Image 1: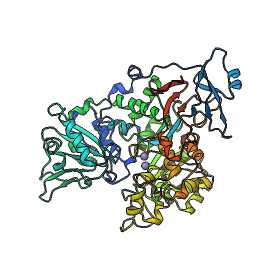
Image 2: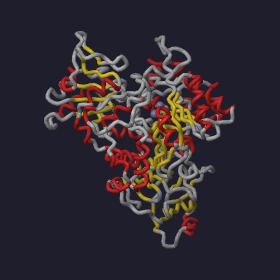
Image 3: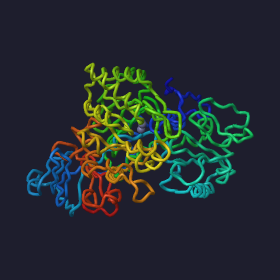
Image 4: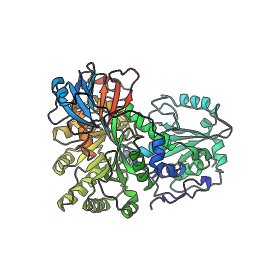
Length: 603
Ligand SMILES: [Zn+2]
Ligand SMILES: [Zn+2]
């Protein structure tokens, strides 16, 4: 069943818990467990008010009428043009070319900005992230692997924070990732009681499928030896039957965090604006939320529209609707493509399987040293039916498929729709598209559909994919960017935040080097490395195309929106291993500067 967005979100601990079909081990990016986050993070009425969002505006910069000269302007146009000047006016690009050409095309009173040799690229486009899910946890303490290599250090850090809490206040943390952090596989009460024996402590796993709490939290929630387990979302237990603080899945987590009354004061609006600003700091000007409705139900669109109309949003939003809310979306009569250049619905998101590192990606044959071959979230026949139905209603499809069997099923569905003449709203996408055989690459090319790769699978999990998940031969089939490039397929890169953090320059570096995290000199399938140019296309014009927005963003050409980033150096010129460290000096959206690093002085 679908989760119910008619619940009162502000009613505190007497909420009814109404969970969708549970999967405790599914892909972090697309799971129904987000629903329970929404039920704890009130969608206050004000969040659907344009005036409210205006009152929260943080970036008060004007739309500029300017000529930027003495730059390296990498336009990402079809001719790969590079110029030394660009003119912008009324939020759009009006000319790119040599200084003389651009100055003569611009207004005589346009301001001249000397870029002093810096590099201008189209604003980066993150084609797959999860906007409200990350906003819903964004203000919890990050205890993940990018901050703490060792779990013991994360616990020490929490202990320090706990000392500053007021009595009874919950300490909430996120991003614990035992696959990337040295230490225990789970956080049990004996570990979290070291943080506090006075106040409740709760930590989310990075996947959001597991939570961990201390004894105080269990006691407040009234969970003990005699509490029955939800069959699909049980409590971890000690050998004597007492709960050990490990909460497996949404229902178990919900049964604890529902007692955190402080969560009603969570500043979701602040967290949403934080994400836009963080995106700008990374050079992102457009991001695409992949599974809208997952946290707050169909009300999410009202929030998006109010935020977009307020002028307070510093990144453009594209979004795909979660198939889990099909009836509700249909009852609202939403059409693919509706919205504005600030926020627009561009796809219909279906999740066909789980995640490979979680052993739930659906495979042609069993995982390494195991007998299971993953899970079909949507069985093959039903997937074809769904795709035919949605395509016939004009939707562009966005289908999550990690395992090779899931990709087979997805291609079968697309071929059936294409044969019936229904696949008209192209491009349709395959998300993650992690394990690709040659025969599948041929089918993708023939269909004209487009993969988006979670390239952090190579960098962060490459070692695990080879050693624990697939073995040597199959791991070589992970994220086959170069093979797709050679076949003329358009593909993109994404972070899938919260699975990995947004970072376009990091994604580009990962695709160019195929390096493995913390294993200097080691690479996964280095023959799949691509050129910097190809990776730049994947994060700009091709991502714009995948998000049905290449008519307005993704390259710097006259008539397009003036969304661009000023970098300290040229990604094509620095050593590949330094691409991710290039400084983003400025980010501009629609001709307004929305971010400037402290030492950026060109503007
Ligand atoms: Zn996914
Ligand atoms: Zn995702």
